[in-house]
Image (tube, rainbow, N blue to C red; front, side, top):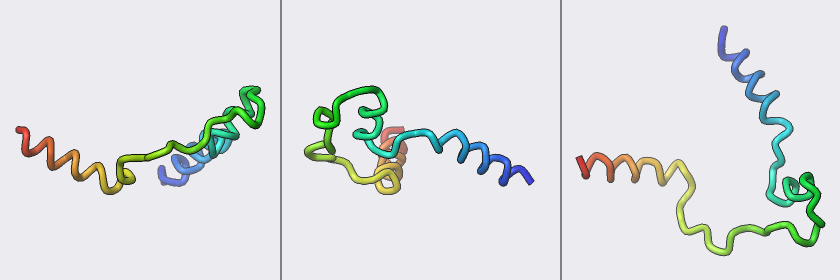
Length: 62
């Protein structure tokens, strides 16, 4: 019962968020050529792979 309400509410909230940094910069009034590009070297794996490693590190430290 609550799940459809939560999904719809989050959809309404996240819809106006720009998808890229370029869209966000242009929405704030920056010229299109001066918007930032992607980072040169991301350095870390995506969250599904980095979160378990952080948990293991925390467990090992305790």
